[in-house]
Amino acid sequence: MANNSNHSEIHALQSICYKRGSLQLLDQRKLPLETVYLDIKNASDGWFAIKEMVVRGAPAIAIAAALSLAVEAVNLEKFQGTADDAVSFLAQKLDYLVSSRPTAVNLSDAATKLKEIIVKAASTSSEANVVFQAYIEAAEIMLEDDVASNKAIGSYGASCFESQLKDAKKISILTHCNSGSLATAGYGTALGVIRAVHAQGILEKAYCTETRPFNQVSSCDVPHSKCEKYVSIQQIMSSLIAQYEVVRKTQFLHEGCSYAQVREESKQVVRFSLCHFTIVRLLCLLPPPPPRGLYGPTHFLPATLIADSAAAALMKAGRVQGVIVGADRVAANGDTANKIGTYSLAVCAKHHGIPFYVAAPLTSVDLSLPSGESIIIEERSPKELLNSRGGLGEQVAASGISVWNPAFDVTPANLISGIITEKGVITKSKDEDFDIRGFVQKMIAQ
Image (tube, rainbow, N blue to C red):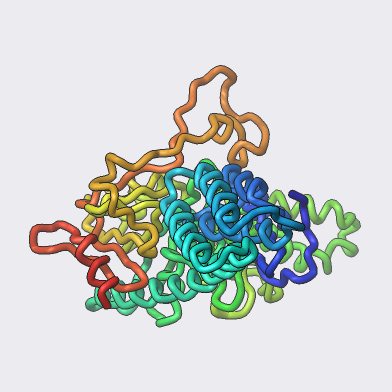
């Protein structure tokens, strides 16, 4: 697996860049400071990328896994064996890939479906090549279907929020974790809903939590309506510094100071401004930047980054009217596993009378699990808390301190207002229960 930070064919940030025989995954651990793509040549590379959080988000994980094996299958020089041998080869690789992230049901669901396809292919031919071809085509279809599914989720979600407007003309929505186009094949689940709400002209503001310890929202998850843009404190600082320099460049020669002095002065001013919450004032005083970075063309998402611990205060202040999150696994009763911190947001939303929605494709639903108590919760490395940048940076905690670092938590169904899928919104019965099994069966029958 190799770095490829200057891939000429990548014009906008995408988590998955695929063409037959070639797969590059955006290394989201390095965002927003670096844009690096990793070349994925086989299932082993795919396993590493998923396990080490190079690629994130349940839909994107499933697709990345499927495509990593598709690339390996395309580039197999010669396979010595029958169609049944090819099925065994691919099935073992799929089981290996599923072991990378056990909580995300999309991954195991994709593996199950792909196994069914290759078994069917083997029943019609004795040629191994037929099985490999069937697998490759099925994996590629999954990539295409994910975007269409996400857009349908966005449409249903926008209608859901529009019905809540009442007397207000616009609505502000809070989201958590990486649920935009980088968590999927290219549109987003929860953030896809926010994009659709914005497209209808009814979004006042999108509030995004940092989502520690990987800062999955602040580093990579606020999209532009025309192309992906990413809002973070580092980028806000860069934008403000650039603007301040524009103002000061015309002055430093007359004042006898060097450009290096101007740049350092600008950094100090911006840091002071951030600490005292005067970003908006500074933006109003300074000339607008070129169409890039935080801004771009005029229809960007109006997004505000908040600390994870600020969500309750935001709700109490009446500044948010809805919460929407993605999901890694939804149990048959509606209990939902998602990024750690989701449960606390749901509790806060319930206390403040704010609707709390989950946006997820039906592939995230696991009807084999009666409740969230059966969901396996992955625990991550202590280093992700002990060091900055999700474990990649310098040590920030005391040596010897013990760490509990679950990657996910489970939000009980009674805290969830509705589950937005590509087939519609799953709502509660008069008994305040979700009939997810009935909804899925109804969709299958159509």
